[in-house]
Length: 449
Image (cartoon, rainbow, N blue to C red):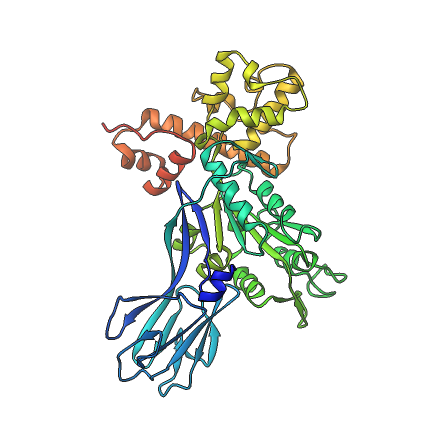
């Protein structure tokens, strides 16, 4: 927090790097029942008093509200509500409280007046970084240099970061670079891939367990939260975290304490949290597949890493980076080969490009021509889809699914009539899901008959 922010009691809230621009998160109280329903009150100070007194920060002219009814305090990015000895009391989500932490979506009742605590976003502008790399992330596009500028700002702090983007866009590299440029860089960098751990083991993976906690627990085991003490905990593929485990993770992050499976002894938790998801967690929240309170706790700073087809001007930079230990150079390719690299759809994003460069180096030829799934990605029909057995299971599966999706959609678009609705009926899927798949693979919409 700057000296100016300390003086005014105001603090810059979360920054979200999403879509073409950036936005700043702010927290507000919305009056949903009372004398001015729909009115929005900005929480712009570290302490704000709500009541009917003219001296209150948020004045509510209602007979059931005390002169100073409750206050909202900001503490290290969290908001605490405290009743100030009001006549009719303060309720949070239907329960009487003296003090409690607020979560987005919580309702506060003071007398007969009801507020909702929520977050909103305002557009902000950030000057793109002059650098063309951040850790192992490379790019000269404005989009990437804006991201570099944001990561340069947040890395020295302890702020929680949420990385969103398709598989292969560099979320892991971004998380590692944030850790390496933070005050915690001498501490451990612990990675938990929520999608690679069996659901019945993920709780132990995160929190650890004591001997006898469950069948097979033959001794004490430290979990990722404990292993990351003093460093950074990177929760990858967060969208795969079981819904029933999310409240326990939220409590650990908020209260900075956790309990091993099978134990009742609390253990302090001191690590920075960086999370990553291949899915838009706001949509997952809307569809009931992810907890809203956990999403808002993790999305203090949200950075969306773009797919490679959104920043094709970075392909030469990335090519030269991955080929830096050889005489290969993008500038030396013939025009036809350059066009192939620039026009390829890159469903595997930067990871796929890196592998293609590796093939070029190994075979002294065009890595795309020798690459996995090129026919499917070029839009031509393929007879079979074969997995690459030489790479990790998860990556091989994702590539195979991506190749299948693109091939299926390509054939669907070629035969479907009746626009998106007709294509969705033919495929037996929801129109919104079809739109998302078409956008994911850079395909056009089906023609209307």
